[in-house]
Length: 280
Image (cartoon, rainbow, N blue to C red; front, side, top):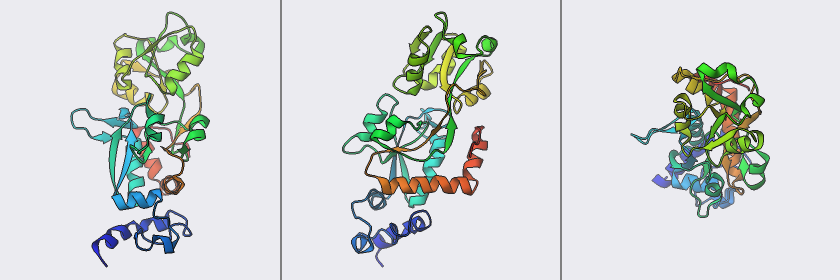
């Protein structure tokens, strides 16, 4: 057996994750066709490359954050990405994307990355044009405000006033939610999502529209901040993995990995590690 065959057959872990009728053999390019595995499939391409390339914003603690000094990525979504790569038997490489360009970057040709991860809400609009995995984390819209003013905000109506300055990052669902639901408040768009909590704490704005997945981290790490409506989110949804259509074989691997993480306790341990509510 040559070295190439040995390397590609290292992906045999897929046999336990994917349908045996589809993934019935290791990814040897010489026999993919006779084994029923298309040589041009996405999983075969990733296997040949030896690396899963993942797009992520790196600005969304504690789901996906890139340390500016080291370039190192960490977070809940980053660990899920690692589990997907492990399922494929390959390494992982992260590529920076942004909320305003997320859809464009996912659909780019040639592809910038194989899939996108990290705080991406499953929506019908996204599923219409792209593939989205099963959910691995429950989320919903909520707010961050200064702890000294937490009693001021008990409902969306308390926020939707001209004197309330609401800050959001551009291009994502937070901005969309604010524009649709806060027609009287003063909306401030700030480019860097990770800077907004600090700006709220320092009085540059009053409220940040965020998610129940993000707010607890900032409340825990900055005593100046509070999330008074954390237990009563304005919306309910799930976070998943996003990718181009035509990659159904990769989607199957991702979904099976998520299911395995739910059944073996890995997902629960990640929720506990990052202080997030487990809903599965």
